Image 1 (tube, rainbow, N blue to C red):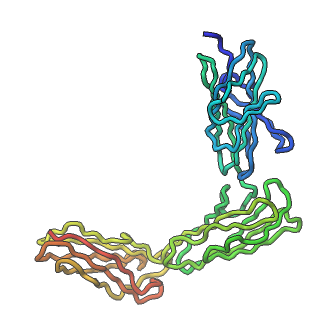
Image 2: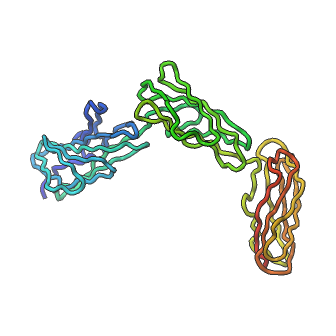
Image 3: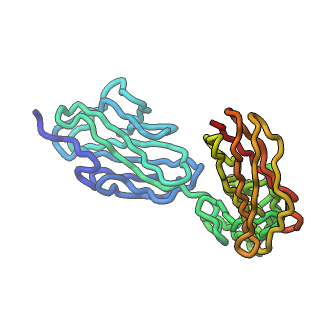
Length: 354
């Protein structure tokens, strides 16, 4: 076997370098022991990188194939004035003479978040037929948002709203490159229940987004959504405002009061718990059943107020029956006070009489 003539990035750092021309960003990074760290790059923009591979020995070697893990728009091998676009096996091998180098150039549209790019380079060396060169970057949005609990991806999560409640918010926006900009128009309108006002600083390097979400309704589990605003540049401003909705009455269980199998000689008790999600007290007026189906059965309901009237516990017992089979219906409670918001709450119940 002939001696090792090819050095992977992980073997000898410094033999592989990564750089970009000055007219497209002016960045230069030497490869760490296992990857070139390119730092933060603008998401949505074309990232151009170049990984240089140098042969420090006297013997030459051949590059037979190049495979990239990224969805790259272009991968090329550059040697002198020659430029070959590669995607898999080369039509003819590229020879790298001793002391010479070859560059692997790639172009990829930067995504949002951390990404690892990996390139497998296959050679004619029987001892080291393949090595991997890697580059790592973090795609960041063009705009920096701050204020409240807005995260790096542009999502502002507001505290939970109770039914009927609204909440105001304020976000500061600037470009990552500190350049002035203008916010022009909201592309697809605002999500339901969201108001938004745009205010610029005197130099237009920072904008304030002030708005309100609400009022929340009983039918919603959350309010808000994605907002996209046109700017005077190539990059639109995109953010999300989300506010969970907490119902006036929290129910446990929420959808089904399940009795499972009920022995017809014994019956069975199940409890339904209703809790007021804010200060105040509940005033239940009546508890009854509706829409009974299946075998004949009777639900005997008793209720109890707890925690200064904020919690209502209904214990519904299926009385012993005479027939076997499925049974079901709806358990209904009616209230006489506004704190309940809805004059009634109901839940489906079901079981099987054995």
